[in-house]
Image (cartoon, rainbow, N blue to C red; front, side):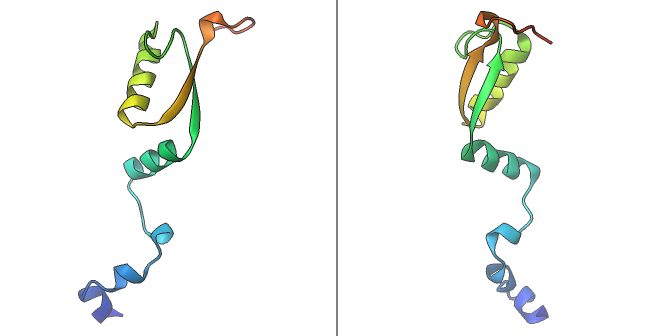
Length: 80
């Protein structure tokens, strides 16, 4: 086994799902594999709060697949 590790062949034998991923890689993989609903104030093109701007910026930067819902237009929803 030591020989395989030294020659770099051991890593090739380990399935991808068993290899340790960095947190950033895990987040990127997750964001790229699912659809997200961003609950924001305003729209994705014109967020009304700093938190909404930050969320949209992060999702855009990570190229996440998402849809946004403007909470300011929803009845019975109060901002936290």
